[in-house]
Length: 243
Image (cartoon, rainbow, N blue to C red):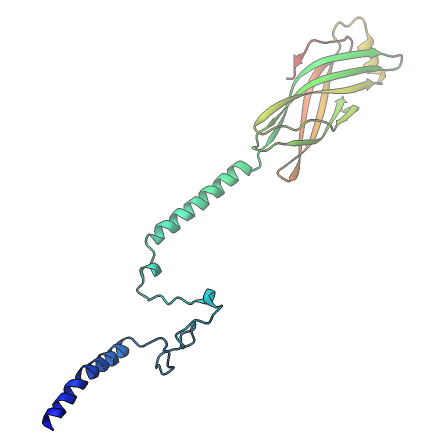
C-alpha cells in the first residue's frame, strides 16, 4: 500500500505542477478570451470568446497593442512638428509675396505729333501721345477701358475712350499711342492760333487719364493728370517729352 501510494503520487506530481504553473501564469497574465467560455477576462471583440474568426469577417480584425509598444511612442515627434510648421509658414510667405497686389503705374512719355486743321469757325487738332504702363505684379493685368479727356483753360475740348488695349504681362512695361481730337471753337483762341504775326502758338493742354484694370479677381482704377504744351498754329511731327 505504501508503494502504490508513492507511485500514484509520483505519477500525479508532474500534472499537478503544470496546473499550478498555469494558474500562476493566468493570475499574472489574465486571458483575453477562451475557447471554453469560462475565462475570467474580457471577451475578445474579434472572435467573441470562441477562439475562432467567423468566415467572411477577416477584414474586421482587431489588433491589441501593448502600452509599452515602441510604435506608440514615435521618435523625433517635436522635430517633425517644428519642420512641418516651418514649411507651412514658408509656403504662406511665398504665396503672399507672389500674389500680394502691387501697383500699376501710368506714365506719359511724350507728344508724338500735333496735326492742326483750320476751319472758318474752329481750329481742329489731333494730338498723339505716347504713354507707358508698368505692371509690377507677378500676374498679368487686363486693361478693361482707357479714358482720356483734354482740357484747355479748364474747359473740356475733347474726349476719347479705348477698350481694345492688350493685356500687360507680369513684371513688364508696355507702350501705347493714344490719339485725341481737340476742336477749339473759342473765338479768342481761334484768333490766337490763326494769327500769322505770331511764330509759335503755344497752348497748355491738360490731359486727364483714367484706366480701369482687372487682376487677381478684382478691378481697380488708375488715374493721372498731366500737362503738356502744343503748338496750335502749325503741324508738328517732331516728338517732344512731357514735362
